[in-house]
Picture 1 (cartoon, rainbow, N blue to C red):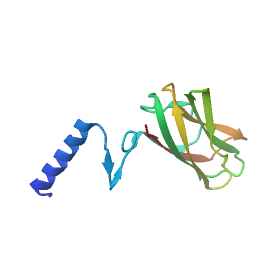
Picture 2 (picture 1 turned 180 degrees about the vertical axis):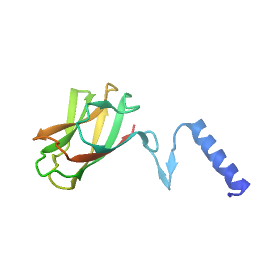
Picture 3 (picture 1 turned 135 degrees about the horizontal axis):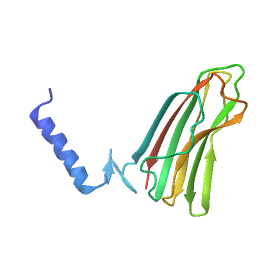
Length: 151
């Protein structure tokens, strides 16, 4: 069990950060923007056997800069299946925008990973999956996405 002093220090540090609203100095470096990126959504979908219709990122409807990291894996292969991709959509200063992952083959175990930045106006910011070729058949996949608000 931690000592009372440690508990008190942790509580005071947490309270201090809540009152200030942002970290301005971290690990010897002055920070910019929000100080430390906030994870606005952490998606963990496993054993998927159908496409995922577009879903809004939780807390992603605020104007700002976001970083999105994703890992898309075929976890159960089907030699007769096709391929899928991850689709992202948002609105920036130039209008509607999209990004798409590379195709994930469902005929072999494997993965597609990626990362990109978004400058959003605060309109809907979504993710989903779609079939590129063939069908899902008996294959299964997993999708992991972390969406961080940078500024």
